[in-house]
Length: 181
Image (tube, rainbow, N blue to C red):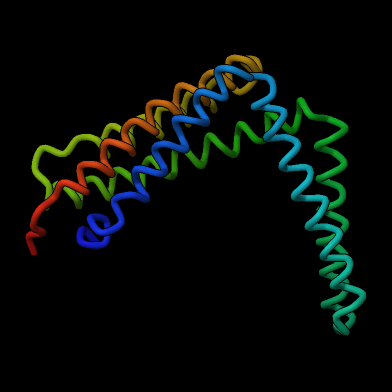
């Protein structure tokens, strides 16, 4: 795994750069950041629903398979329409999903960091990134209704700090000369 990360160090650095850019955008356009989440969710769900319905009637499926795709299509259309009609509720749901994503990814990153410490001495960057992810998720769950601007700024702070950690980690892997087995 270390050899692969060393070879592909640029992917970590790129993740960091993208996260930093996202963080900057979240500060410049906080309301647009939240609205963009809602619009993307609505568009994805709506398009997914349309394609599921197309598949239900054009793929030559059996009755039960067709019913499942029809249900999936209607659910997608429903989520898409609901996200557009009730963007505030949708934003809170998105915040909860992002919170759980951050917590789970933080725990996974911590496990990876523990494994990497066996190979890279004094490496604390991934541990800090893992703690930031977990803390960010807990904060979002603790105050999901704190206000869209506050949540957008939290997204921005998280993205900036996480991006800096990933960028630093990428360059750290780039500088590794030999890989102990």
